[in-house]
Image (cartoon, rainbow, N blue to C red; front, side, top):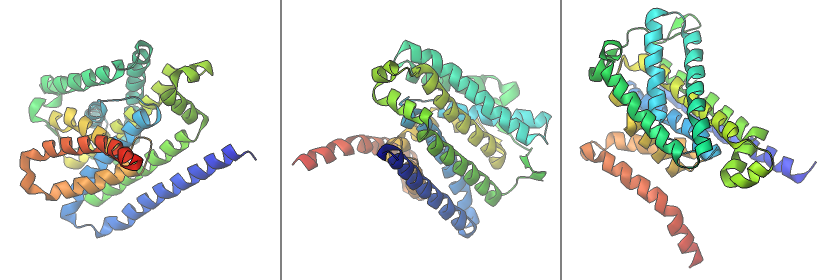
Amino acid sequence: MPAQPKAIKRAASLGLKHCALLVLTLAVLGPFVPDYELLGLNQHLLLALNVLALNFCLGLGGQASLAQGAFCGLGAYFSVLAHQAWPEASPLILACVALSAWGIGFGLSYPMEKLGEGFLAMATLGLSLIFTNLAVSLSSITGGPDGMLVTTPLSILGLNLRGDIAHYYVFLALLAGGLYLFLALRHSRLGRALLACKSDPMAAAACGIRRPAVRSLSFGLGAALSALAGAVYAPYGGFISPGEFDLELSLKTLLYLVIGGPGNPVRPILAVLGLESLLSHAHFLGDTRTLFHGLLLGAALLAPVAWKRLRKK
């Protein structure tokens, strides 16, 4: 057997073991986390899911996106409004949420890819701002800036999903599924085409790879995962508002992916769980947490350059 397929299989197996170890560790620790800490941990898992979703876009396809907060919010509001009409149809609603978000993501990415680099980032920024403005303006539907109460829980396998620990394991199951899909895609033929488009677009085009279609598929998967995370989170808190899914969530998602490294499935999630847990206990920072996030992003961007210079010396 050629060396290259063996190396690919070895890398896929190693990545799968790391992801499985992370998920199993979180699954075992879940029952031992105090109830008052589970709320914060579930919020960290929501952010981790959005980071993983952005990894589909930036880590595989090299597409910068500032719309993960908007996709998450779209999933949350769509799920809440649909459950008000069909409270027992959670599986169907979640499937529609994922499919709709994938379609929006694909429809947004495909034409922007034909225009060139940079246009997609601006389009996703516009989508994020448009979503926030619509959620605030359509007060008769969304509750406006005051938000809306969520009284209908998710119903999975005939059981209503309630409580911190139940939602913790649903978030964890969604994270495990997202990690498996990410690894399967990265080590597939489509994943290699995505990495080729990311590293050398001209060479990929010369090999017959349709860059807009390939990258749009991956972008749609990231949008779908963010929307599913929002759909699961909405009934958990019992309340949603536009401020929970604004541009700040998208920027934090980008921050932690840069810190952990685009393309790596485990390190960004560890960065979220570790740093967000520390920040949640740093009450003395107050409103300066945003500044702290900015400093973290700057350090993450400068660290590789500084490390290369140190190695040269």
